[in-house]
Length: 329
Image (cartoon, rainbow, N blue to C red; front, side):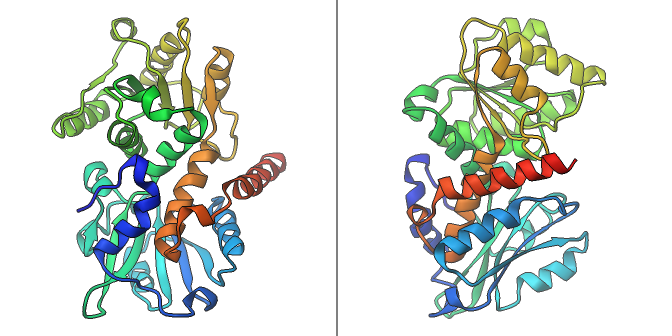
């Protein structure tokens, strides 16, 4: 299992071939090949708009189709079809295929979930299915774009992750493993979830702790980055209200930093976004993370370097689509 460092993302394509040779045959970029997003529910996803733009940029004649289903066996058959290059995998299927793949990248092993399957061939030409989690590069890429000299800024410093679901693990991997954060704080509505995440990453050598109360927060240093991975709902339960108060405790301090709001659809300007901005923090929207993780999927599927993709053009198109969805509600 291989690991890809933050300062070597341009080497992601080269490292992907350590899992096997090229899956593509000459002329495949111009043939009608298939990629998918498999999950449920996903009908409002902006991913097709993003990937169709990337295909347009490269003049690639491929499709990106939503497969909104809970039938994992039926989709496994589609994934193994010759004209399928790979797929994005989202909830609730991020773990179901792990035992069935030929190999997984290091971030999948550490996070315990994937969001991408790509294909390579072994020495005899047999197809190998490889699992990746490009969400980690979505987080690190969004932070790297927004923060000057991001490695020096985050290295050895504290980062707060709000939430303890699957995406929180990607955010921890990105900030700890790729950006070299020194400490990770977790604030979450359910103590049982926080405990599980803390134990998992402590066992891997991460300096991490759960922040369970305002008193806990007051004893901790101010994080340089806060990553919010929880949905945009008004807090009503006790745990949700407590977590919001903990976040406010950090945000209200004199020392300010950067915050990344991973929730962006259908409303990019979430409660967390507005709160962090009102407290003087520099807020990075979740669309930036989506754009970056999507490029890494394209690198793996089209076997092309990141530098060939126009991030600004893709961002503009996705932001426009997001605004149109917002206006329609």
